[in-house]
Image 1 (cartoon, rainbow, N blue to C red):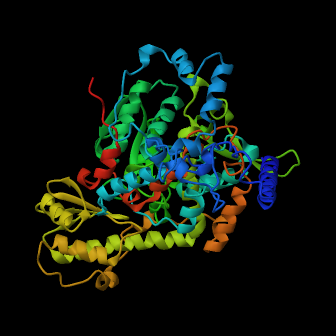
Image 2: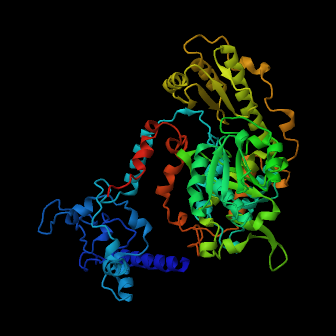
Image 3: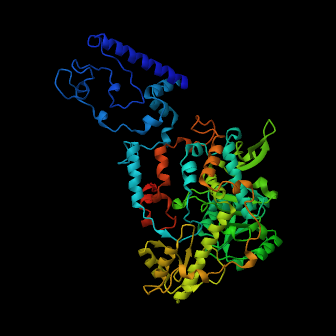
Length: 632
């Protein structure tokens, strides 16, 4: 490519020198018009796109009037409509083959044109006669696409959401946003199919695995899955595989997130499993047909329960325990592995990945060494190269490059490596102490809210311990939620008399003061959130407080300033082959074909900061972009 550029540059320079010499010798007016070869990279409005150019005798410049139809003379011609259209079209910048080259390629396959090749390839029986999109049939230019997405973004309303249910606002560190999420050296080659050209990404994903094993207290973790509900369904499948399909019932405690329950029920059909939901106290293993049980820690309504005895009872009946959990909560809570859980799942979303109206987000699954060959998704292993130096690779390759069709547990392409890298770098950037500060602050805000509600009276605060979600009982939950809505605040209404309020990294003392006004029902509030601080106590019982260390590896204790992390990110990306260097030989088919114009709106606040369970009227931009099912 570099040689081609040099040859082209020399040819252009030689032509310009010759033209200059001819002009000085007075030959310019007498020689024939210069023919220019059109280039796919030159706008159709450019004079270089025309083959005939005359020179003005008096000015020595190209006579533009000959091309655009203005002025006088016998050579005037009209301009085409096509020449007046915008030139920043998508195909011109992103399809490398010209129409002529496409025709030649089709001819080499034995067809007169690309259309003829498609006609011979795609069966008529599966084609749609016509599909009309009034606005998009002609295609949008890149600038028009950006304007269209800005219009959609403006239709979304960003309220402050305290809904929780596994989705939280988070601060995306700018150094991670710009240098991973918005950096083609990271996002174009996000799936590490070939270890020898993926050592940077593999190190980052190994950091993710280390983060998960440390926080969950289990020794084996994969390098991400699609989302928490999918991870729970994968864990359900693992429980079925552990007993070789001999027990066909999977129990889900009703303190799990409702979307997780729904996903498991849907996926269970494919495994011929029966899903039963029950209150924790009513769970019964007496049928002898139960392969596993799923519980939430903390629960979907915020409660923190000690599952120690529960796990022992399940194990006594030969039942495996799956625990869905929250990474930030595990900074303060005893790890599920120490409670005896067999499999732990959850989402890494609140570790620096925006809500984005529900995703995508990186999920995790951790388990014991005993079940490592049943784990879904990619697993990064430490090995050595041909020189005996440390090297990283994809372990358990029967589920990776060599997918075994119907026997595959999952496809690694859907496992959100890019977002797992963001979450891993969030932990690297903050380190154990930084994460502890964030977790304690979130817990403290929830505690201050509970103290304030008790001062207001007429509202009952849940008596069970909590981390970030406070459950309250009131006279009219809908009336309070409506009042909050008027203040651009979203709350979760559990039932007619129950509300939960979840806090996160982005919550402020001002937010608490607004909430107090909402729950006061118009009555004056005699205190502020700041004034309550001395009264706030840790709401987690000592028996469930985390005592074990986490993120002790040096990688989580080195890069806590922006310039340090920036250098680390650049060091890793320099080890990878990405679209910055060449076409990617394997994998990443989704991302490497996404143009910058398509990627830009992904990080706009109007799209990133909407909770998936926010009222639909707050997400009209999203709703307009979601295809509706066609009527038969």
